[in-house]
Length: 497
Ligand SMILES: *Cc1c(COP(=O)(O)O)cnc(C)c1O
Image (cartoon, rainbow, N blue to C red; front, side, top):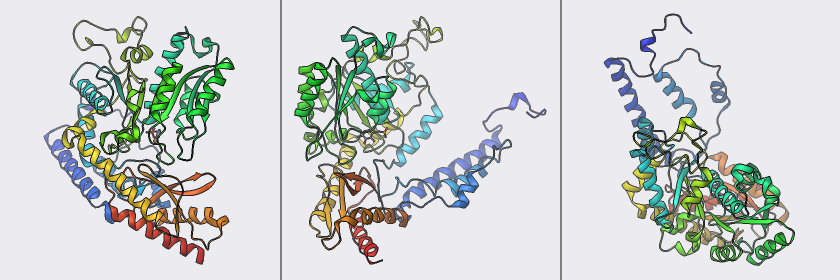
């Protein structure tokens, strides 16, 4: 600490009119540069590796003396902005990552300026989050009495849904797990998903104290949908073994191939067996916004809980997802704060605490950011129908890619592509089958390293597949066509060498 510190001016705000003017000029420049950068993305490589010199520059000691905002910004422009994952680029289709939008970027700035704590004090920002949750519930087919909360991502939204499931079904078995823990149930609580269920289920089972052995993973059919008969048999066997089946997870849009489980059959099984029905709709749930695609995810609207990401197909910047829970009383009961113990959170009949802390009692976090604003501004500005059009556009582009693959003798479709994920490989008949995995892996690496496009990969029935997951509102049909040409060119180039 410096001895000359003037305690009356130890603020991070500009200190006088002149400093405000300087900062205002810098802030305007940041906005202008950033918008130019986004507008010019198409002429940039999709991805470029972070060079050693930049890595070295970022490997800095703690700066006890600041360099000032201008210089910090300059270093960001030089060392950080050019070397990201690439998911904001029109030809990025790796894993499942959304591109974000300029409007949502500005909304994030506005949200940070208001900087409310979204534990849920009943002020305008919380009303905004309650409203966007209600809008999402309505457009995804949930009743107006449903409850919900925005979360960082799909992993967290799924965890919230399954936490409510665990609480509700343990209560039915006579145990309050919040008080006594899962061990008090005395039996293994079993959760069901398919072999295609995303890895979040493992995280959730571990964190909730169920253990990953409590996941009963059910095989899938040729379309990568859960085998419903095998699920019935598994539930029966687990009951016979003395376990407590409690939850079935259906997926609307699996991460590998975009398959959707037969949600109506899963729903029927859950109602018969008195199990909680949770749907992971991380990206697929948004198919419901399109009248042409809604039937793909039929049954989702009857789930007890649903997780949907908004930072994938919803095109919002990271992070943003939503957990919906059909029964608000169960949702709140799962996360309720015991105010007799947490005195510092005590309620009041008037003032800021008059309505309690709505969101801290529907999720895991206490202090939360105002991510609701970017949802609210985007939905208001564009309308839900524009999100539906964007979803439809990705599906149309994916179907175009699928047709190009199916009609090309050098290419092979590796799995049905019902939605926005296409898995394929370069496989001309004169290339030995044993070398296809290695060649296709090399194709993907060269695509990424050249900056032309970023698909990712997966393994399907033992074979390496190029995986193109399109949740990118910036993609055009010509980008997909360029991908196909490049895959074929690289395949030939690799086999010649
Ligand atoms: C992405 C994804 C998740 C995980 O969501 P995050 O937002 O990455 O935490 C879960 N399920 C599916 C089907 C996904 O695609």
